[in-house]
Amino acid sequence: MSSKLLALVGPGESASSGEIMAAERIAELAARAGWVVLCGGRDAGVMRAAAQGTARGGGISIGLLPSADRTEAAPELTVALAMVLVQPDRASREFFQAHGLAVRLAASPEAVIDLLRTSS
Image (cartoon, rainbow, N blue to C red):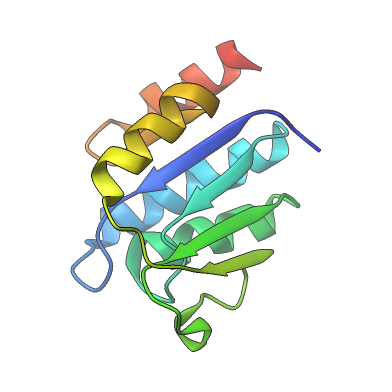
């Protein structure tokens, strides 16, 4: 299994078409390059797009659902973890400082793709 972990973070229902397209593209390219993609996991917006792109790229996607309800999960996820994070901001920041690369979709897709290529 890959030791490279990419978290794609962005809006759910309020995601723009540009954010959705960027998330799908980044996730697909990351999966093809051997990255495991982590996302929010719900069947909405950037979370669904990340799962779809990863599946298209033949990779592994892990969804961290914000509740114990797995019925909210995007169907394309490889793994859906139903959980409740007590301090999601702090926990996420500490996790990714130790284990991977977190990408917020405010960055341009091209910049992220370049970063993935140089980190492979």
